[in-house]
Image 1 (cartoon, rainbow, N blue to C red):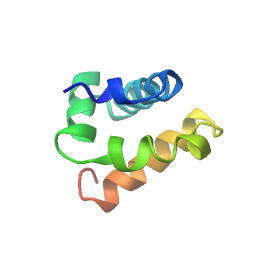
Image 2 (cartoon, rainbow, N blue to C red):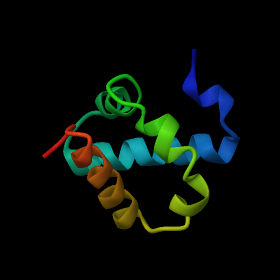
Image 3 (cartoon, helix red, strand yellow):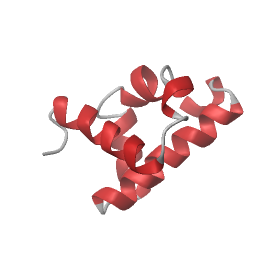
Length: 78
């Protein structure tokens, strides 16, 4: 199943933005970050997509920092 097919187009674009910006910030490949947010956790489905309305109004740095905080709380990064 493709997680992006159940999203509105703007949510899909935002999810890709989040993945790519996290990848840049963490120094990882986009596919690695995608795996972290989808396969290793449910952050994409339980945080990024449901909170799209609030998250997408923030700036890039705030979004990346917020997502890294979520990942830290879940023990995914330090």
